[in-house]
Image (cartoon, rainbow, N blue to C red; front, side):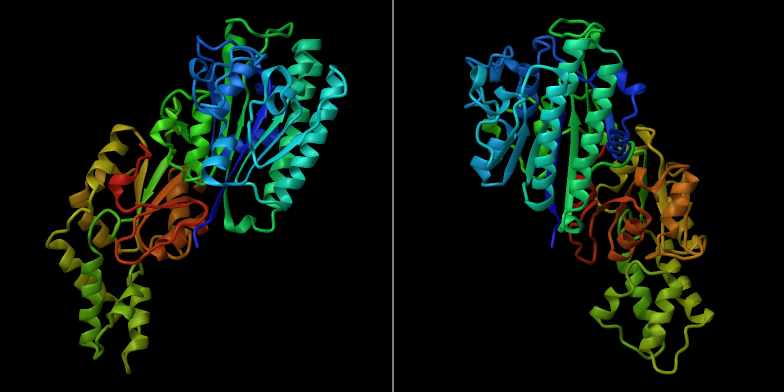
Length: 488
């Protein structure tokens, strides 16, 4: 059963990017470290005010389309270009949720609401226009939002925190502003905890986006064209993004809604005329399986296992053959010994398998569709690549004559770690050689055995099945071909 995909967008109003460098924000850092944090430049045509910026963020179209030009939304075109919670609810019947204190977002005040028709709504207006009243409103908002996120099942949610912006307006970008940002981060932590404590969390794949709309001048205030006012940011983490990923292009506000749709596997209708697209990212490294992933050697390995089994008096069935795919020579020798009466899994049997397989490989191997293009893109992008195989070193070196050894920063073969696939050791070793945490590495695999090893190591996985079907799962994408791998 594929994982249930879910999205949480947390909008924190008016947080300067440069302030994040010296204010402790451990929960935002967790999101950024698990994915990326990138600057966003507010488009020159967009006033640096909350209304226009948030409208661009949640609709995925620019100001010339949604027509929210100020914090008075009168004359908007949000009926034509609705927010993502409304579009998903009305067009797809999905459960969506919005929690916000700023009235125009969720009420008819000042020409609102921006969020037209989510399926569930939380609103706690501040009791007064003071920093403390906004802190209290954000606190009530997060209290309710955490309960909904823990005990209910919204597929796409937006939670708005407004206190940092209001504090800057009243008191400037000094200590009180920084403390308000720290408080917003603590509230973000409570929302993340709500996701982790959901009863169904283990069966879900959550994408989390944290975004701000604009910056502030030192004295507080925005709406102008200065760099600090036009600089916003987006942090994003999810099952399709490796830790420390780099956006392939500049990130824009209109990309946020598109990222939501992508995280839910929802292809935008061309009639929506979105201006944003999901943010393509580069992993810090790519770890590639060999047999069945880059080269079409799985049939050769299966034939070798059948030949050796037949030599020991057993005809390998198709079901039994599936059990040898992705396995080492030692594991396969032990398996064949259980199938052949009177046979022991000794070094001779293992050697027979290796010699038979190597002889077939040395006659020539075919690359899997898209393999050469993928390797070329990795080399052109200067992205470290490692080959991680369950085959013996002699077989790996033979295949490298076709793949090109220069493509890989390192290669790991069977016997070069204490344990082989399906244990995580080979992928942990490859990541260590590249001096990267496993979560920063994208693994490309074809077999359940290799996928189990990569996921046990803590890597993100793209599965491109060859001989055995593979289901999608949290942290795992399943593609039909390497040609569909669009990480680069």
